[in-house]
Length: 228
Image (cartoon, rainbow, N blue to C red; front, side, top):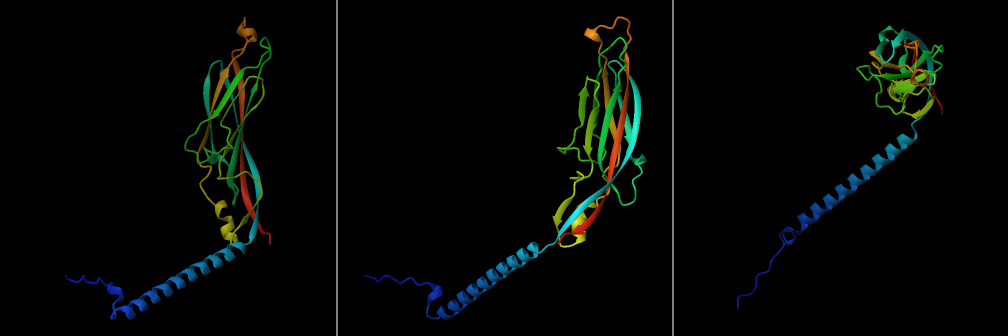
């Protein structure tokens, strides 16, 4: 009977035992050093973050107004435009927000009833926050009340003071130095539907309406102060 041959692990032969132990020891040492460096980096990062100073950011605002008055006929839709390049933006200011107020001058006369007016800010190439939840781009009224439309222009701008953590003043102001927002033309569609009492106007006395659109462009500059 032929004796079975022993299977030997080449890593643990007599000749290789010492080099193998040395290699394992070096690997373990390298692992310990690497983990230690990683933990030290985490501690340094945490300490650095916790020591970042806080800065209070305030907004100084200025407004500029634009107005257009249009006379619309019954069932007419008309587009009006406001070129924002005509706005005088002071040095150091940026455009933050646009508000449009649409009002009608109802001639009571034989009508005695408010006409139905609708207004829509039309999305175009104007650089603004078209997807902001703070926007109000459409409105309709038949009670002689103004329609108020809102469009946020500068990212996250709401005019309210805030406190941020940053390593220096430059980093704290980084989000409030972006150029290009508010470039373009504000486009608004107006619609008129004349309402007569009980739907009947015997002499056609109410066939049009004068509509006024007042646009207010809010511009802001930023001031900063370290709080601690």
